[in-house]
Structures are given as structure tokens and as C-alpha cells.
Image (cartoon, rainbow, N blue to C red):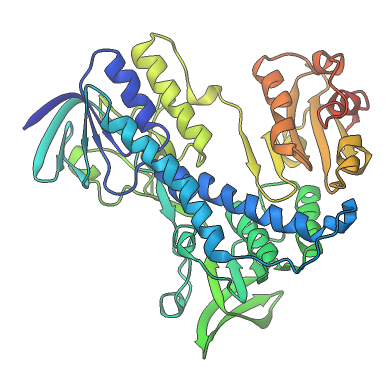
Amino acid sequence: MESYDAIIIGTGQAGPALAQRLVDSGRNVAVIERKFFGGTCVNTGCTPTKTLVASAYAVHMARRATDFGVNIPCEITVDMKAVKTRKDHVSGRSRNGVEQWLKNLKGCTVYESHGRFAGSHSVEVAGDTLKAKWIFINVGGRALAPPITGLDEVGYFTNSSIMDVDFLPPHLIILGGSYIGLEFAQIYRRFGSEVSVIELAPHLIAREDEDVSIAVANILRGEGIKIHVNSKVERVSRQGNYIAVEVVRDGIAAQITGSHLLTAIGRRPNTDDLGLETAGIATDDRGFIKVDDQLRTNVEGVWALGDCNGHGAFTHTSYNDFEIVAANLLDRERRYVSDRIPAYALYTDPPLGRVGMTEAEVRRSGRPVMSATIAMERVSRAFEKSETLGFMKILVDKTSKRILGASFLGLSGDEVVHSILDLMYANAPYTVLQKAMHIHPTVSEYVPVMIGNLRELQ
């Protein structure tokens, strides 16, 4: 039995940084990785998908070249093998960087195999049993396979398996109209595929306000993406070389036929084969590890970080989990999951940057609220770049003057939103931002202008 001060299972965004902090504090650490270093973000999430988004944006702008007075004297084509090669290079560089970081980290021993709990503070890996006072679970999650009749027979892509595609699907049907599904929808439409999106909810990205959802849907429809909302998938089947998806909408049955199928309906944690029951570690009914506000499990000396704890499914929440654990364990600083403000982005073009509460949540709270909205077509920077789709919206508590939330759908919305997020973390009134002088011409300069037009929410 090998003894360590700490064992880290998984090398997603929280694991490597935590390993570094632990060895820097003089502790010896074992890191267990059963497949790809870097976790979801580096291998099948943020890094490769945003690389594909960049390729899709490039071909989109090439087709729009004449809008800017630029003539391209040839047909615009997409080399899917080259697109994949570029994606693999970017993703591989990140993955290899994480792997070399850990393997060259003095005081850190890397085990490349599956780890499984043998007790509350011991883990079996590659025939060895490791024990430690502290154990950190950072195993991430994977695509959920929805219980749809016929799905296993037809063959389908997930966000992971579609990373291996080096060809153009003639007609890609996407089950799920939320963040993952919509990003792939626009990517493959811009590459040249016909794309159909099927969503069970009454509108896309169901957690967002209806005005945001409608605007996103109109943007995607404007590029030729077919959107079917309020549509329940009954079954799928193969018809020759095609896949038929049978849906019911408002009691009326219909069939949508395409060449390939991508499922983007939820995710599940990678906790089902860790032997958590042997360690006595509690999970909820979906398999997420139960943790407290400092990410401690019910077993003393065991923490769960990242997607497997159900407290955020983003790279930034996973990294923040590391910061919270390191602060509490190593820095004698009290930090909590409840301290963080919800923030995320949808990386369609234009992107959606989101922070805090939605308008629907604000209305349900019953508090007096002011709001302001500005169309992106009024923003000089957007007009100059001929990227005027979308709008910006902000919500403010009338009594405290604190910002409650914002939705920035438009050029640089994923970056501009941080000006709101930082002010919210500072717990400063909106008047601070209203008086700020921003640089022209930028999208951010219109945030103080928008705040100056706050009106009581009707």
C-alpha cells in the first residue's frame, strides 16, 4: 500500500492546479487519470468546440466578404479534414501541456489507470492500493443518453464522439436546443450542413428569458437552421441511409429526416464506477456527489470538485472549486460556493453573455426593479463591423441600486458581461458604472449609456 498526503482522481480544471498548490505546500500527491489529461474542457468541451466555432466564423465571414467591399474570386469551400486537424492540434497542445505539467511536477506521482475507492481513504489503481488523509474527486461528466426508443439502433453522435468527425454531414439533426446543441447547430450549418434542432421546451435555451430565446432563434433561423420547439421525440429509426425522428407537437405527429443525429440532452457525472458506496460517499438520485458549501463530502477528508458535484458544469466553476478548496485548506481563508455569482456564455455568433438573475427570476422575487435595454444596431462598434444582431439588457434593484443580472446577446457579449460581473462582486451600486468613462469605439461604452436609461420594470 502506497501512502500519500493527498490523492486527486481526475485531471479536469480543478485537479492539476490543486496538485500544484499541494506540492508547493510540501505535500506528496498522487494524481489518477484513466484517459485524457485535461478533462472535458480540453478534450471534448471548450477548447475543441471554440476552435470549431472559430473555423465556422472564418467561413461565414468569407461568404460575407462582399459586404465589406472585398471580392474573393473563387468558391468558398470547407476542408473538413483540415478543420479537424486544426482542432486536434489546438486541443492536443492543451492536453499535452497538462500531462507534462503533472508528470514533471516534483512531489507528484501520476497513475494512468482507472481509480476506484477501496475504503473511505484508499483507492485501488492499476493493481496498487493508495491511501491518503485527503482525497479529491474531480472526475467530470459525460453526455446523457436519453431514453428514446430506437436510439441505440440508429447510431448517434454526442459532444464527445462528434469530435472525431472529419466529413460534412449532409443533414445533421440535433436533439436538444440548449447551449451545446445550438453551438454545434451553427458550426455545422456554416460548414455547409443542413441542420434541424429539436427541443422539448416551448423555446430554445429554456433557462433564459423569452426575449433572449426568440432573438437567438431568429439569428439561427436567419442562417437557415430549422428549429422545432415544443416537440417531444417519440422514437427514432433508420430508413435506408437516413435517420427518421418522430416527434409530437401540440398533439400532432410529424417526422424529421436527416443523415446524422447528435444528442445534446443533458449530462451525467462520471461517478457510477468509482466505488463511492464502498467509501460511504453520498450521492443524489442523479449520481452527483453531495457536498457542502466548502465542497466537502459527507466523509471527512474527501472533497468533490467540478462537474461531478452538481454545482456548475463549466470550466470556470470547476476552477473556482479548486480556489475554494485551496483557500480553505491551505490559506486559512474562508471561501464558499454560495459566494459566487452565476455567470456563463453561449458561444454562438453573436455570443450570449449572462450573469446573475434572469428577468423572469427578478419578477418572481417581487422586489422593485429597474431595467434597460439597447439594441446592438445602436452600438457604433457593432455597426462598423456589420455585426448588429442582438441586444443588451440589465436589471437593477431599485432600492439597493445593486445590479441583479444582465443578458448581453451581441458582438463581444461574452467579454462585455464581465464589466457587470465585476461590479456585482464588488457589491457596488450601478451608479459607479454609470459614471465611468469607457473607451470609444467599443461595445462596453454603451453599458453606462444603457444604465442611464433605466426605467421601472413593467
